[in-house]
Amino acid sequence: MRSKALSLFVLLLISAILAACGGGGASQNPTTAPAGEATEPAAAATEPAAQATEPAASGGGEGDLSGTVSILGAFTGAEAEAFEATLAVFEQMYPGVDVVYSGVNDFDTQVVVRVQAGDPPDIAAFPQPGGAARQAADGQLVPLWPEAQAVLDENFAPFWKELGTFDGTPYGMFHRVNAKGFIWYNKPAFEAAGYSVPTTWEELQALEEQIIADGGVPWCEGIESGAATGWKGTDWIENIMLRTQSTDVYDQWIAGDVTFTSPEVRNAFDILGEIWLDPTMVYGGQQTIVLTSVPDAATFLFTDPPNCWLHMQGSFATNFFPEEVQADLDNQVGVFVMPAIDPAVTPALEVGGDVFVVFQGKDRPEVKAFIEFLGTVESTTDWAALGGALFPHKGQDLSVYPTEIERTIAETIINAEAARFDASDAMSAEANAAFWKGITDWVSGNRDLDGALQDIDAARPQ
Image 1 (cartoon, rainbow, N blue to C red):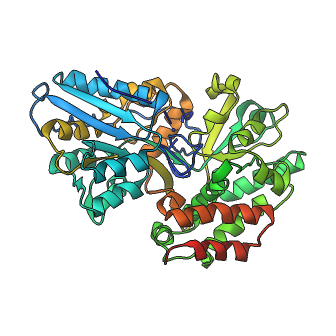
Image 2 (tube, rainbow, N blue to C red):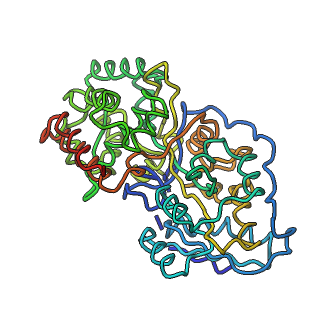
Image 3 (spheres, rainbow, N blue to C red):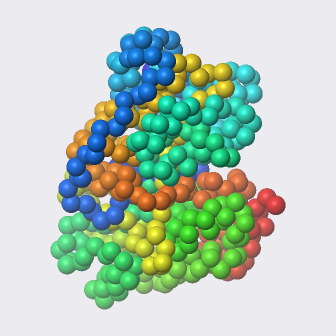
């Protein structure tokens, strides 16, 4: 195998559950890495469902194909090396095929340069849907053929096909994914204090009040991330939106048809403000939120006693925990998904992941066979067993994941009823940057909420 690699989403997990702003690949959330979302810390892993379909092998039976398949992606280093486990399985199935993966840190630039030069890779793994959508709109991509769509329909929840569909045409096959909207806690301290995992928003609020009454501080938070300061705050707003509004409203918000000054979005900021702007609710108060780095905030859970008790972060949060905690995750860490807020709204999962697409003129039999292979359970097992990657494929044997946390989050991704990408990542670059800045200005007190929301709307392309 000549598979190349250089790194980006180990989560824990769990990275991008579900790259922006959170989530996997070279997301606009520079500190994120891939993984998933969970309901409550799950009991045991579910029984594996029926086995996923074998690759449809559009170009012939196993072993019949030959040639080289080139893939360009944004994940490098350890993640690219782990991807080699997946490539090895395919190359064992098709000994005549050599799959060459190249991971680059400036993927967004490199893929455009290569397309414009008339030298695209066979396959690109886009960490954000916008880049793939633009290539599809320019006529550069091959729509998924019937065999690939059959694998996708068989092994994925329907929303994954929707997330890889641009202008009504399916183009993308997902593989390693991540999710956001998890709430993490120090398991031994939490249990010793007699606290219970909340399953509703009201129970979460009651837990906050109990922690305060016991002399503690409920939330650990920090949004400092260099030039990307504020992305962590956008994750809060996105997850609140997915629990207070329909996915249709969420989509309209991304598209710009629902403004930031709308009642729907302002309501999400008001809900977050009940936490962030209350000095008893966040360790260190508002200024600490702005000045504390995203990774450092996660470590506040593990002081003795904890400086604070709850931390909202994506499935990749474990990357930020102290080394001794990472070495004993299942005993040291608990996790549950952010509860529903509006009982009339079925919460959607905020997800991310690498969407694999084929460029025009590159749909040779070996290339098509590889895309179909990515949609099968066989493509997930070896990488999942290494840890640090989650997969949405139905029929997985969840016992292959090395930690209970990963099993919990993978199970939640598989069972999700609906999902959406990170909204800020899906918005224009101007809107994304303004969203980061606006939420930072608001929590720091440099701008009132009305002004901050108006500033974001003013930055959105008309």
